[in-house]
Image (cartoon, rainbow, N blue to C red; front, side):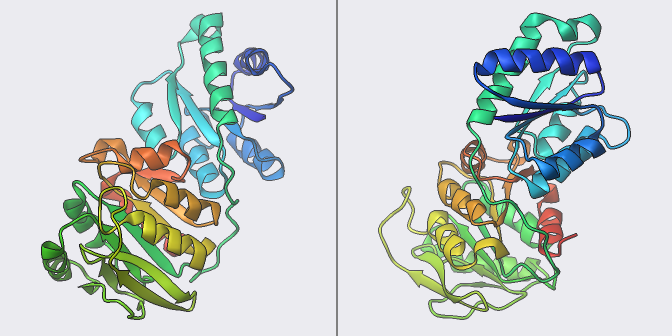
Length: 329
């Protein structure tokens, strides 16, 4: 394990390091630094499996530090702060956990330090091995794939209505009956700047177009990265549904690899979670809707817990984050 502690208190860094070594009960490479900019330089040379960072840093804030780490690396992050109001922001920018840090002498209490050390070690041991994100050039993204279920029709309306050209093809799996999938596509077509249609088997995916999977067919991609063909075929139920995000995400991981963006929105169950992880392992950028803005925090939670989600984002900010990734902003 490689652990990085980022906190301005030298005493806290030292005491926490000691407890982590005790908890790990094995050789553990621990680095300690008080400055976020210096921490980023060290991460570039030696990516840690786990990071403990105080959100209240001078210079670069802990929030900006977490956001930057999550853009490029797969390290698990525990954010700490004396301020409870930092919890929401820390989780929204990508922290895996948030722990309140007692004020003053209480921060050096053995029980607190042992608890922090235990969580750092547990998270570090459970890190999924994923591809490191390479620097991106403009136009790198060839496709955006989105999966959603319960609460997804309104969530998709919010997200898709804020996507604008230029945009690669956007393929959407929403758990919905075949009776309503075409009507849903027509509704979105009236709401969105980009044209929206129900996907058809064999059509070539076009830029600046959004495709909704038919409610009774599994949607996937075939062809080549520069000529993406949409496949819509009937098949057995997966996770209880006849149009599965798993099918779409798996095909995108294989065909598009590190030139795709995967998004998982509100929904019950686990559909899409495991195959979103395959996308991330292939080098794709991945986003998950955060708990606070979900109608049902099921699919996004499952994906986040297994390491498939690079960063959790509120529904209100999702379109902006997708756009930022697509255009490498």
